[in-house]
Amino acid sequence: MAEQAVKLRCQRIGCNATFTEDDNPEGSCTFHDSPIFHDGMKEWSCCKKRSHDFSLFLEIPGCKTGKHTMEKPVLNKPAATKTIRTPSPVVTHSTSATSKESCPRCSQGFFCSDHGSEPKVLNPTPAAPTNSSSADVKESSPPSKKIVDINQPQTCKNKGCGKAFKEIDNHETACSYHPGPTVFHDRVRGWKCCDIYVKEFDEFMTIPPCKKGWHNADPVP
Image (cartoon, rainbow, N blue to C red; front, side, top):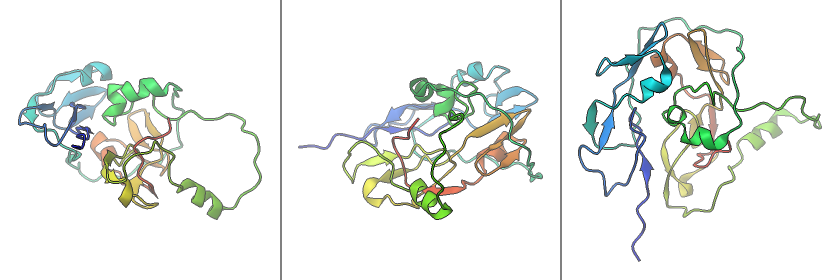
């Protein structure tokens, strides 16, 4: 019995389509090169089309064609600038997991004002004190997920990762990722988890992940 082809999600900016390795002809992918963000204006470096509105900006059709790929685009690093560390600003939260998964901004890895970060629990019930070692063990525990073939290729959905993996090769340090949330405030972009904030979007995209853990194809919203 022939194996069913595994659908993968294209990592090119502006595409977001699914494909299989056997069905990926030249010209099937329409995409953009890296974006440019400056003084509230969003512009595609490839076709110079721009917009002030982020939703309209992401809807601008891609100007380049090629094959779908699982490799994330390499963004040109800007000139080195001093990293700005600031107090974490207040960000807007959303509890709609379904809309977050279908949102074109979130699926491309960009900040979305509707689904910017995970909701926080206010006034949680006090728990028994635990030491840091037990917390680390809990954090690196294998994620609960649906049962799949251990040799089936999957795509990690952890923020900052996006790599393809097989469950047979998955382990507690296989994934490098950001637990988040992302922070975009007053032209400053960064990750609250590692407390790093920069001014340029290209710099933000190159901030190295700060956590190790299990690859996860089905993250908990």
